[in-house]
Length: 220
Length: 242
Image (cartoon, rainbow over all chains, first blue to last red; front, top):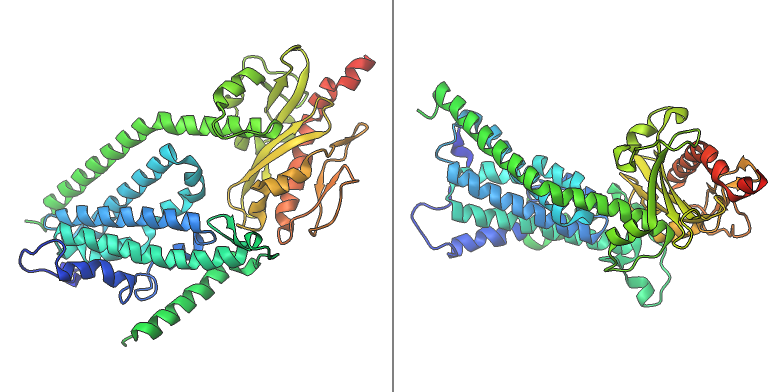
């Protein structure tokens, strides 16, 4: 049990948007994507992507939770006793998740009804814990914020791609807009796209395409 | 120092207190807004079964003007002094039908308040995966369906979840529950795309969601068995015969 697992990015002070720090945002979009490369957060990627709207809200909620938890943990990182660090991380994540859930319930009730189950699941989303453990425990709040936002965006990007294909082929619409009807084609929704299996296919294809493009290989 | 037991215990306690305090504060300060949302949704669902609502309608005002709330028992007697908001339908659902308390929403005529134009009855049941519920609005003959609104906790999106769409709910309009005195209910059929417009007790099914449809059908039979006494008692035909 040590905190040495964290990837330490910076040694001396540097501007927030230095080249290295920009990578914290751009890497998770491609070569270090949380879903397709780190293979974290797949469970919710299957659950919320039948339509694009919940996928978008889930992406925003996860980005907020990851970024803010990263900042808090990073600020506390030198005080957290390493023996209870996981439970401390969990407490902070839960705090943010419940706050997001309560705010949605108060200000966006319709979305809350659709999403509350999945928002609750953010607590167990491996991306959040993964980033806290791998990054925020060893880095300053600024880069941690960027890392959280980057990973949230990387997750959200895949969610939207998967949601796009599932809603288009499963229900014939995009963000609820009936695409096929609008162009005058009769389309019968493909039921399997709406089941988790449909998401597995699409996530698989996305991983395939992405790894072909950037040449990522698993190292054993 | 950071590894000493005392430090760990104090640290854990401090985190707990701070997080707990923040959450309690958030929960308390957001509660009025959240309760208002829940209440607004309930009223909106009830109104929508009877009349079309536009964006920007003042739901609270409409509801107050039109709806008279009461709670009845299985025998159809009004429980004096009880409000529907005090009745948890999900809890009542678990009781035996004869013991349930049943909320009731009557749309009274504005000119003649003794006349009931529509009555809205909550229903509750179990779909394929989880609970389903809704409101059924009847016309003044206490038999013909004016409109329904369904909601669900976890039916399959795109399949069973369609019960909450207008497309499915519109199919119930104009159907009737009773044939003379017998409860025939309205039964959603298996298979989709058939025309049941001549049959007052059947509606077209949902392709791929036969089990959710079964849940809806059971819910109808279950709850209209409960409401039957009230409906028969209040129905205009009966009162004319008396």
